[in-house]
Image 1 (spheres, rainbow, N blue to C red):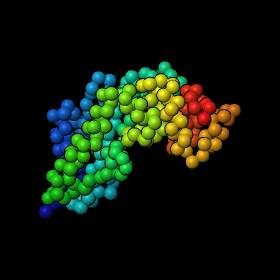
Image 2: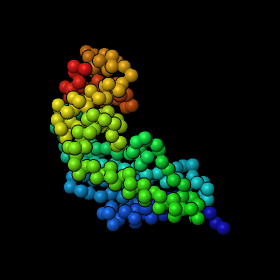
Image 3: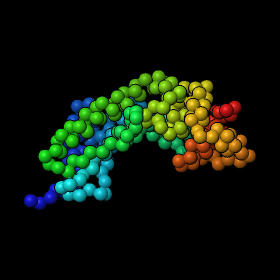
Image 4: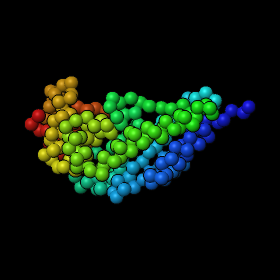
Length: 226
């Protein structure tokens, strides 16, 4: 019996998941592959990913990611002193990281016998984890209040949390948010030292919470008394 090609198994799986989401207003794009839905300024996207380690008949990985974007946030970036390039991305992550405790989730849809059960489980997880995450943006200021003082899935990077809070609620609440993240650093002194350097690069640094918090503090004039 000829083995099914992993790429085709993956794409067929994406289409089956997507067909279950169509009644909720999502539209499938094979080029992603992903599904997306608009709600006012918000764009909600569910993207599918596979692996270069797939083996025909044995392993075909299906991984699911979610993201929220906003043209209004991009416009805010352009008009503010935010120390990064303007973009529409607001929040999101891998499905397993959109709940606490975070745990990377993948599915193996290679087996013809177990495939439908796996796909049903993917859909169930999207409905119980991703769709409620999207729904939170129907009340963005309430969400921002929570993001300002706690670890909220989808906002695990401090720069994402502070940017969202400042955009939605302004400087005073952004002060609370940067304070929350500075308190979580292993060394407050490292943050203070970098923040108070005579010269400091304006753009955010990839993967460095200390550097990014210091640069945000300087650029946005928050966290200067921490």
